[in-house]
Image (cartoon, rainbow, N blue to C red; front, top):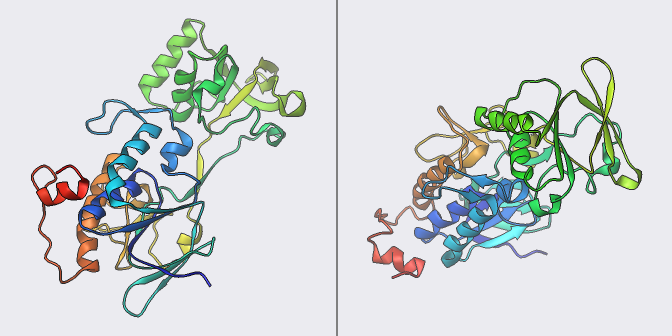
Length: 342
């Protein structure tokens, strides 16, 4: 029998918001266990764009997803959280005393006073392009995420899509590529106007090829891409030389078992109040992209704010008799001792 882990808090999701929740809880002496279905911390930041710059984190003019993850891990080190990676919470049961029993697909069992859902959009998987033989090339020549930009140096890259991810990676990888082509079904892009303008400037300079059409078939033996057949608006087919295809058609979000926990949902998101960021179930909180409320912005900095207010509510549930005095890390020697900087 698996021994039950008894703890104050279980955080579901090890992305930036989940990691910062460890910090905010730690300042209040709340120890957390963190569960994530991925095999590493960082969530979508580390999985989908580890080398892509992020420009809207306060105080950090530019930081990559991987750097942000590493900084957050350094920040929470004094609180010694326990991570349970490559595990998914499969069951949630409310106990008579108001606490919760959680079980993972790996057999880990928790009993915890509060649950913090920081699962981003739930489990996510890329939408596949409508190409009949795309499966043959996945992993070798077709990639749905860029984990190491250097792996694409000197390659003939074909980017498919018209949104932010497609344009962002085109701009980031173009200096490394031997050739760069973007194919989109129409000459109208959903990406940020600045990115579109930069792409069109590269097209005008002859550094990027823009093709309007749809990829119908991939060509090349043994999963090694050599060309893509693109159907053009006039019905003709053009063959584009390439050895790497990056299709960006968005992500399919799945809540998984979370949808069966009896928490109120609204279009696959979890409604919360803006005082405590508590769900319809007292003691279960939701922060980051998984939640919704009037005026919600899906920004990492918004999730950090939500984590701070969530922690102030969680401490009152975990230790209802404890007097909580709000303190600042800049002036509190007590907090500075916890952080190891006093």
